[in-house]
Image 1 (cartoon, rainbow, N blue to C red):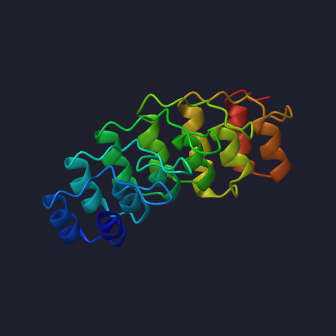
Image 2 (cartoon, rainbow, N blue to C red):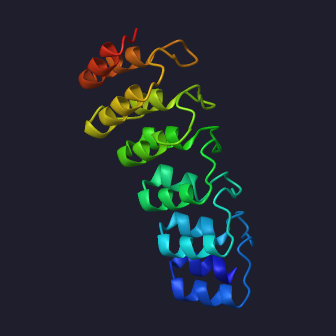
Length: 194
């Protein structure tokens, strides 16, 4: 537990000392969090790197299905995301909404995270338990501003299915029109969205 607490604080010296003393990187707290997950929540990249070098698994999930890989997809930690990708992150892993990292990043308008994930073999049209893809989340939960518009542009350019409707049969274009997102509407119409 000391290792988890030190990682949560971002205390690299304490983490290194505890590892040298034989602390286990697989130990979890009552929430199922490992030291690496705790470090990811704080975006403590140097601590995360030390833990990974000591054998921590970037794909281990806590009780809420968060992992060192999934956390930065939602929180926008680009360096943390890159570190996990370089160390075997499973881009097909799912969160508690049955959503991918791409869906999480699209919802929050994290353009750089989207770019990074689109360079992997992530499932671009994966549907979460709400019945939404990354494209739908960027429109439904986005604000139509520059960041969410760029996310839509990137997803469409990467081959997202612009006509994949939600579980109620409402298409991305229909959602964009309902919200008056003119720039997003233009991107979708240019891609032959219906």
